[in-house]
Amino acid sequence: MFNAFLNVVHVNARTPVSSPAVIKGLFNFLPDLFLIIRVIRVKITVISPFVIAALGYVEDVATSSPPNALSGAHQ
Image 1: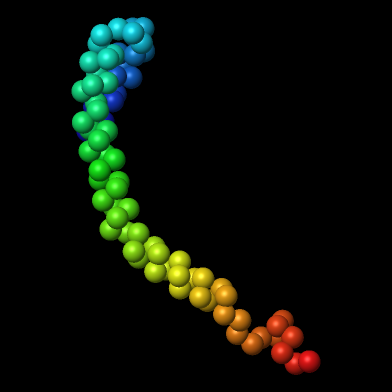
Image 2: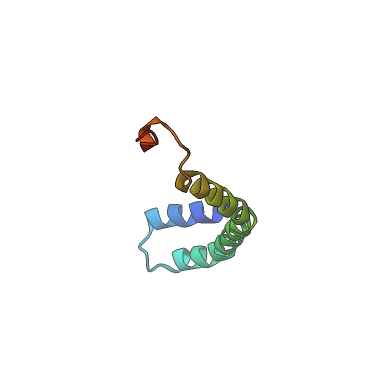
C-alpha cells in the first residue's frame, strides 16, 4: 500500500517537483491514500461509541464525590 508513496519520495529525491513522474506517482498514490482514510474513518466509527461510553463513565466517577477524609465530612 505504501509502495506508491515510497516511489513518489524516491522519484522526488532524484527529480524536481514539477516533473511529470512525480505528478504521476502522486496520482497513483491517491487511491491508496483514500483507502487509508476510509479504513481510519471506519475504525473511528466502530471504536467511538466505546470511547464515548468510557469517557462518560470516567466523568461520572470524577464528578461524584465519595465521602473521604479530604472532603471535610467531619465538620
